[in-house]
Length: 213
Image (cartoon, helix red, strand yellow):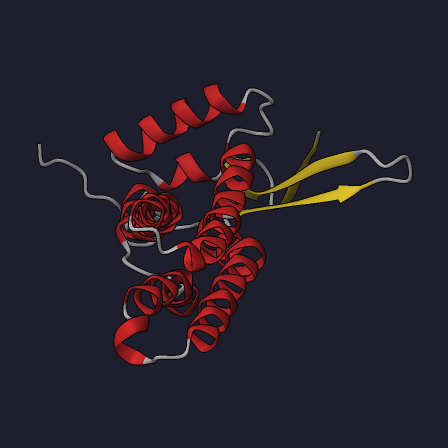
């Protein structure tokens, strides 16, 4: 007896969910403009600082240019690129009693929402971590070479970029109060493990999850 064939009119469900999810996760860049500016301002500030003596003899001009680039970087990373590339945002506000509160937002992922890709997550976190380290190196080189006129600019660079790093680590860890443990745990995951988009997103329904501490 021949095996019965499936009727042409019968609905057959095929599960392409895993393939689509895998293809999405491997997609290179879904926010190219945000990714570009995430690196542009901070890299431009470093390049301008290193090449100031070659490009211009004006100390004031170089100082103002680098400071503006650092300020643009701080604002764009804090308010735009973090939200688009990894679904995170943070800010600090002072209440009526004068107490300072850290507020964190994490985009909740739903099947219909657009999550960050692996490449974007790697670019975001590596850029956020490596650039402050470079400014710390500049601090010691400036100090040891006695170029003290640049010291204020280097300290400003460390402060602005470290503030974003501090805020996003707390945001990623859900507002964990012990920053030393949070930073150690997070940096070990970022540097030594392969980043997965789900590591940078909060599961749940579409919208924003807000933490306040």
